[in-house]
Length: 134
Length: 69
Image 1 (cartoon, rainbow over the protein chains, first blue to last red):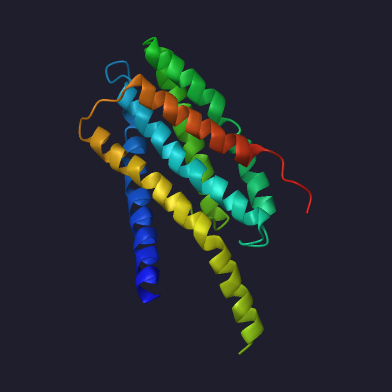
Image 2: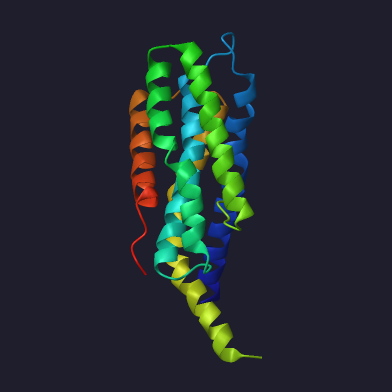
């Protein structure tokens, strides 16, 4: 029993540490994007991967909320984050299109908007006590 | 000490465990891949397509209206 508990705790620790470090790599480069420092496929991957970590956390939080397994304010927390999370998908589609066609002027604009939305979601979640591990 | 309250909290924690473990193990390969890309590995279109589909699936679920209590 202790062995299984230890495995579970290690899994959580690793996921938390990994999720806590990796997204920073993507977000830190957002402010420096210019025509001379274009948005590459690799930048696109990093921001999308950061978003994936967040959406995994949000989806899990919602599932647990519907099972009454998290805090009692979870419904209002979810409804407060949804206005931000609803903006993500169209921006991801736009950014992908701009990067693939190498339309860097629009890619940089959308990239920065996506980073701002990412920051808004993680800030709102943290303010409401939701740990997304990022 | 109110043992009933403690047991209720423990029960909630145990109910949450499977979902948390699945979420943690699901993202571990992605975190490793982020590290590799940050170190210079190249990304394929197929990889981006899969990632976008996965984000869309998560968001469709999270953004849908909450069912009545």
